[in-house]
Image (cartoon, rainbow, N blue to C red; front, top):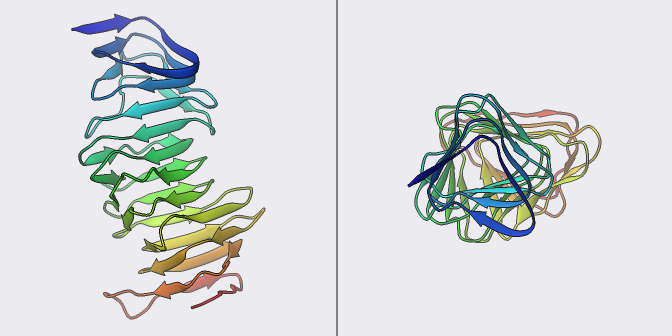
Length: 239
């Protein structure tokens, strides 16, 4: 069975609303507060309306290569969360998210075909996502923190990650180290502190704000003899 709505609003002060079948929304799908768990089902629009997430709201997706489509526009509060939690390989759509949480199991693929994914909040993994792989030469712009659970590996390929918040940011979590291809630090208001070791296969640009903490930064390209360190004067703890 499938269900159709004109407008659908999730406004739960606690708990989760879980879809029991595919749904179609002719106009607005609004998650004001609480959690909408789509599981492995569709929640597509009818060509008009807005898909919106309010402050503290969460949208959980467990389909492999899916994000709700068919809406004229999307609006995600910086304190909202989209969580990809399938128990198999899953593609993360190129969007402007608030917080992005990667869970479930197997591999989460970022930015298929390139493009820029923007987070006004944090990037986290929940301890079950085994691997995060960045596809092609895409871009990830993060205004919050990066926190990877202990068992999560990051394969950056030709990816560029930019930390560009307006308040203090951190790179860390339960892992001992995180690998990057190109890493740009561009926080003009506060520091971006490395709380874990960083391995960089491409270039490092510190436009402003890098805080080394007690980390070791390793430049370890296996394909090029030239890796650039650019920007303002940078102090490393271990290099």
